[in-house]
Length: 447
Image (cartoon, rainbow, N blue to C red; front, side):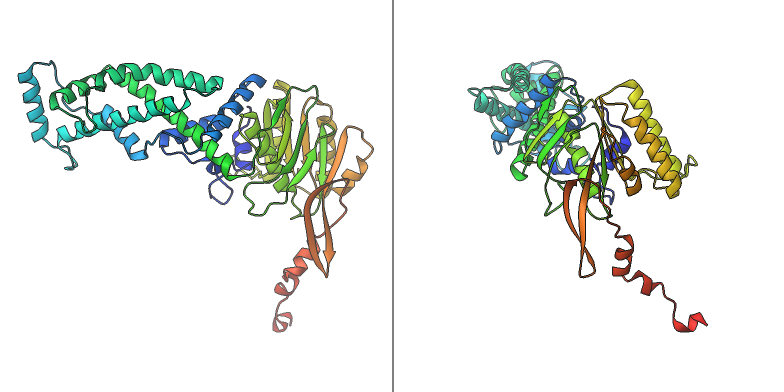
């Protein structure tokens, strides 16, 4: 789906704002680097139709139920096979006994640069590991042979089986440890020439299996659901038990979009940004066929996701913070001119200017956004006066995060509610943190 680099950063998809691993890491139980690359590609996959999304969901469900039955191939084995196939070591030119004996002797007497293997030991290890790799894939195919396979899994199994046939034919007479040197040299020549294509196909297929099993393992470890994806005439998202996966003890949200523009209010620290990120993460994952962090979820087939949450100034481009915010709104407008069915999330728009400018600019932007009713807009703001002024607009729905003051300290429920918040806690929070006293100079400094 359409989601630019800032949206990925805002939602902390690959890396959190503090540099720690992002949402992707929660899905990453892969065994191989290539499997991790496949998983990254899956999470960014641009699935265009409802059928494609449902097919991917079926695939992930299948591997969830297969959790623990992945082919026993470890990372070092996978890496060694790759190194072996790219090796430039000599190989036999023909199968005459004399030539094979001489080749074997030369390979046995010469050593690779590491000193850990003779050349012959290196080739033997490569062929042996490929043999074990092939046997593991054969056993996996046997495991799923009688199952009702999703379309994507059936196609993947077909590719694996098709490539296994010629490989098996050339290694069938080898023992687990390689066997007779002449047979091993013959197998080596084929594997590193014509057979390399089939082994590359199998390693690529295993990497995809690795990614699929990784998602299946994630589902077992978190409370998740597969969202129901619908094709709707109006923008739609609903969830029960929605939560942000980074929280150890999250407060879950039950939420549904009644209109195409949502105005969100509430004091700082009440949970607005966390909610916006949780919603954005759900749309991003669900649109790619992934499970989402909720008990139940239903959403339309969004064609894009656009966020403005952690906007920054850009010294190299000479952008102030406010101009960066303006530029982000401009990018949203350019996207609107190209396509629709986009979810737009704006957190505290126009923080980089004075209240009067922020009020006027926000009022203008909202007035334009509500004209694009085939898209979903969610905007959070501290401009309570603007929310109150817009209360009678039938195109806007209002939500807020509640808070109260108990014994002089703010108390947050972290739950979303319908309506507008009028709570102002900024000064109270400063006072509770002891800021006024901290900024008070010593009595001697006042003189």
